[in-house]
Image (cartoon, rainbow over all chains, first blue to last red):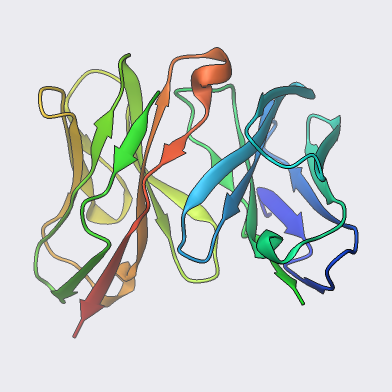
Length: 113
Length: 115
């Protein structure tokens, strides 16, 4: 009964490749997020979607493109992967924004060779 | 803009001792405050939150935190820690509504509980 699930859990690939990470939530939430956690554990918001519409798009290279086919899914596609993209990517969801706690997936560890 | 400062990057403590993890925030508007815990190789779990009302909030696993508006602090405390509390702890702030509603995280505090 995983609330927020991400696939894959681990992703090892070469520089220059294109990859996708999928996220699904079964909590009935209307807002979903992508975060990047670097090697020093620092967490930074990348994107948020509310009812399938992009709300927040922080300073992220346009090689990163989120796609939300419905309210329960928010996928992250990354083109032309670079060494600096190595990190753990977390998906999260919440009911609305601001005062609602966010529920996180277990993360996708992306390693670029 | 909002920011969060967690003053200690690492806190070692012996089992059954009390612990306080410090968090200060900066914001020009009213905020919501959260503490999350991250166990190894897992995502973040909500420990507790302050939205309004009583400044002392209780969370899961025996943790509590006190909101102090004048000192812009939201320190996390536990009177007696267990080995299983070893994890990374993140303080986070968000503001009201709309595009301001995203979470801003501190850099985390690694709590290591020793037997």
